[in-house]
Image (cartoon, rainbow, N blue to C red):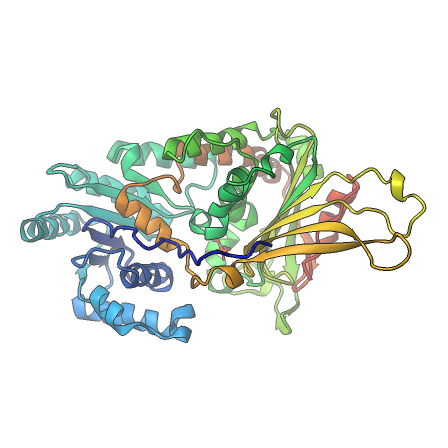
Length: 511
Ligand code: BG6
C-alpha cells in the first residue's frame, strides 16, 4: 500500500529497559515455559529490554536445581520454534541464563511459599529491590490456591517501593459463574492493579495495529459504521488438531477455548469507539462496552445463530488426519465442538443492523486469522450495460500468518470498452517492517514489568465475554446434540455456509 519509511521493531530504539525484577514462574516444568515464555524473555534480553540482573525463578514440584532448569530452558530455546531455525544469539542467551534459578516445591505446600519468601528477602537485600512478578503458567485449578498462598505468605504486599504482580493465564473460568468466582478469589489475594490476566492475542502486533489503523488514519473512521459497512467476518482458522491436548480440549471445545477471549478481543478492537487516550482504563472501558452491547441470544435463538462442528477424518496440508473422536484422550463418542460459527449483533448506535460473523476451528484447510470488513455496494446504475458489476469493497486485516492489510476495489479493465474488474492494494508487514516475528508474549511480559495493564483483561471485560456466551452454553447443556461433521482439511461444515447464505452472504474462502 504505502512505501515504508523506516523499520519499526516491537519496541523501538530508545525504549528503556524494564525495572529489575524476580520473575517467578509457577509451572516451570510445563510446556508454556519452554515453548513461549523462554523465547519471549530471550528476545527481550537480546533487545536490551531486561535489566542485567533479571532473574527467572522456576517453581515446580518436579525435582530439579538451578543448573538443570537452566539446561532445560536452553534446550527448549535451541530446539523449538523459529529461534532454533534462525540461530541463537548466544551472548544474549548467556545473559539470560546467568539469572536462572529453580525452587522445587509443591504448590499446595506452605513450605514452598516460606522458601520463596526467604529467597525474595535474600535477593532484596542483595539487589536493593523487592520487585517480583508471579507468573501462573499452571493448570487453571491452581490459579486461586496459588494466589491465596502467596497472599498468606505476605508475598503480594507491596512495600519498600517494590511491586508484586500476578500474571494469570487462560482459560479464565469455564463460564460466567466460575469466572466471577475466580475473580473474587484473586481479588481477595491482590488488588486489581496487581492482576494481569493474559489473552495472548492482545500481544500480537497486528491486533494492536487495529487501533493504529482505525484511529491513526483520517480516512477510515468516517466510514466505519452501519451506513457504510455491510457486514464483518472474523475468522480464526487453524490447521492443527487437538494434538496432545485432548484431555483439556475435550472438556473445553471451540466456544470456550476461543470465543469469549480471543475472538471477542478481535471483535472489540474492530468495533470499539475511540478511547480518550491510551490509558489502560480508557482502552479497556471502550472494549468492554462493545462486548456488553452484544445482543443477548435467547436459548431458542441459539440454533439459528450458532453452528457447532467437529472434524471427521480427512487430509490437512497433504497429510492424513484422523477424526477428532479418534484423537488421543478424546472420548470416542465426544460431542465437543472443534469448530464454531456465530452471528453476533452489536446493539449500539454505530453498529445497529450490521452482522458480525465469527468462526473458528481446528483441522481446517489453512491457518489464517483475519478480520474482513465488507462495505456496502456502490449503486450499479451507471454500469447496468457494461460487462461486470461493481463488487463491494473489502478490507481484510490479516492478523496471522502473512500479516498485513488489503483493500479490494473496482477498476476499469484496460481496453476500448468500459469493463469492471477487481484489484487489490496490499500492505505486508514482512516486506515493509523488517522486524523479526515475535510470539506476542514479549510485549505482554514487558508491559507487565513496566506496570502497563492496557493489553491485559480487566475483570469486567472477562465477565462480559462469558456473559455473552452463557445462553449458548445453557442451550447446549439442555439439548445435547452431535455437532455437524466436516472433513479435516475443509473450510468447515456446510451449516456454517448456510448461516451466512440466509442473510445473502458468503464466507471468504479459506482454501
Ligand atoms: C489458545 C487456544 O488460547 O490459542 C488454542 O487454547 C489455540 O487452542 C491458540 O490453538 C491459538 O493461538 P494462535 O496464537 O496460534 O492463534
